[in-house]
Image 1: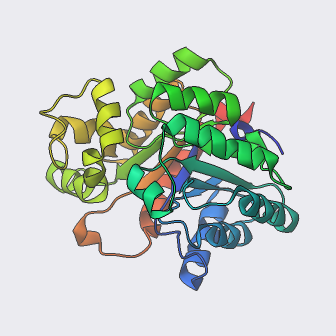
Image 2: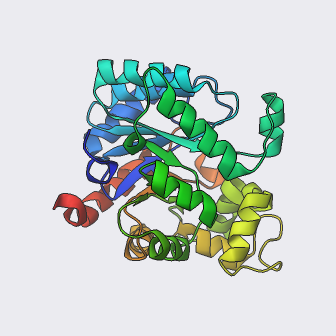
Image 3: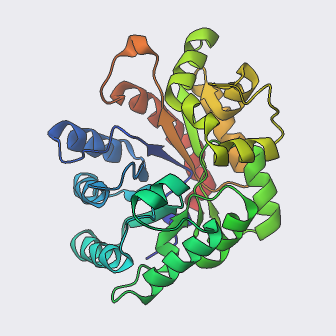
Length: 302
């Protein structure tokens, strides 16, 4: 297949709501995202079961898009089974699926009856399993949910690149300077299309605030210069504003451009909504974000 850099463009949609993709309303929404021109759809692995099935449903519903599982916890996964599933997806839909992998945490490893060990060693062993599978998943079809420098180095040498969560543009700049131009950097960016600071920050904290308490994210945010006064439950205003793009479309475009200027190749846009917007698929916000596609198409057209 072509490199992910060429196929996924500069912006894509990351969505928890696109899980459960067998549901008619999700398939309809995925088809609309495809028609709107988004070249990449991203879904989280969550607890694992059903994730690859959802990738298949999205590939079917969005025939022009690359679909990435970003990211699936490696614990409890069988490399040979994953290889077989990816080969079947390729046969049915063409090589449009990419696999993002993460080490999650020691609890996840223990729940799968495995030893967490050293994260990079454990992930390298899993990648060895993918390489040795009867139907291996090629390195250019893989990504890691890397944050720290050692996992970034592993991603740069064993996969197409990495998909970091809860990072600022500085993270891309720092890691790009370390590993060079070749690896793909595709950061997650939470987005709140609301100009009211109070509502927007409340939506941000409800959507991603809980992750700030996770040790891996706290350690990475500390590396990026945030102190204990920022790493409070839900995050300080300074931290929320640094991690989440809120405001109008121009504000979101500015943040995307900041990531790209810092060395990222692709930014995954994760819509968070104020409580007043209700539940369900954020299709209105996705339509609004589609207006950004022409701004960034020229960057990847050549």
